[in-house]
Image 1 (cartoon, rainbow, N blue to C red):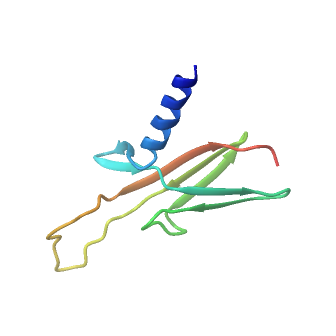
Image 2 (cartoon, rainbow, N blue to C red):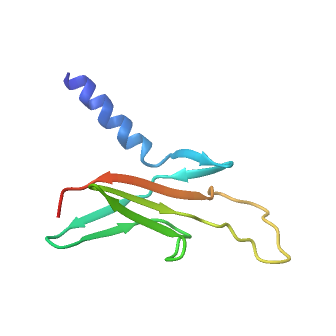
Length: 100
């Protein structure tokens, strides 16, 4: 049983930096997230580069907190991408939180 628990923990840790799934050929990443629960509210800090207040969605229904951030890769006009070292994709995480 202990070996199985360690295997599950390793799998969860290993998956946190990888793409989860795709959306029409785009990757969806698991961002690093901090959740601070207080008596009357929840504060969420998520590392989602390229996401702003217009392209983020946060819902809390039945203790399920869902975070989604859409990234639109922009290349300046009259330019082309010559070399890229990182992938562009959206972000998504889902958590179960305690009742506040």
